[in-house]
Length: 232
Ligand code: ADP
Ligand code: ADP
Image 1 (cartoon, rainbow, N blue to C red):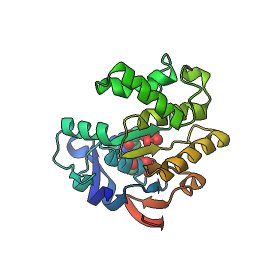
Image 2 (image 1 turned 120 degrees about the vertical axis):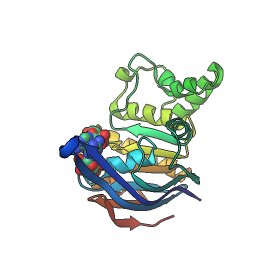
Image 3 (image 1 turned 90 degrees about the vertical axis):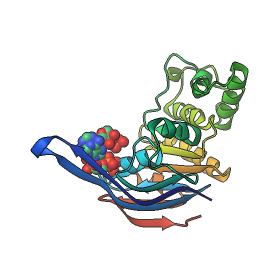
């Protein structure tokens, strides 16, 4: 089944006021279907609309017009509260900058989203340990971020995304802050997650990184201008 179904999605940013309103057409009519279990890279030059599309897929922002079904649920017209609920259930985010809390151990960083969901302590620790083992960090549970390499920090961030069992892992330039060896660790992990059936969507401007995906979606001036690879 499709996890992401977009039809005629547009996004217009308006800034300024009065006679000085400036409008930017960041997305100009996106039709995009992503099936469950696909591994997709969104690529394109700076300003082509990658971040905007990523924010819309992740329900961090709403489109100006068009239809977006996430996991079969139409999201247009939903309130902020309803969108946040769907976002927390279905999307695991991974960012270039990790966003780990420095004073917490790897285990407690991963457990944090479960605190907000009301999962009890023993269950939180059990699931967080399993998530860290799944990303190859079973021997780093009690390390703080400052005691981990860049690649290990990003793996903690991926474990934190996975611990909520999201439908989609949404990664924005996940290797942008990493040296090539650490980047390779992360890409190998994405390969593994894809093999296990996870849906992975990443934004990258690095051709070598994008080439690891099963399908590359190319954006230019707010439109999809090409797709490389198989639609699953
Ligand atoms: P990319 O991620 O490919 O660099 P973006 O989605 O960030 O592209 O931006 C697409 C276009 O929308 C650009 O012209 C950018 O300047 C504009 N834009 C993005 N965010 C905003 C915003 N919050 N307000 C106004 N314009 C924006
Ligand atoms: P990213 O690394 O995700 O592309 P940037 O550092 O380029 O993000 O931009 C930071 C934020 O500013 C993004 O959320 C982007 O959408 C927004 N932005 C980009 N261009 C503009 C703009 N012209 N006016 C206002 N906000 C913008």
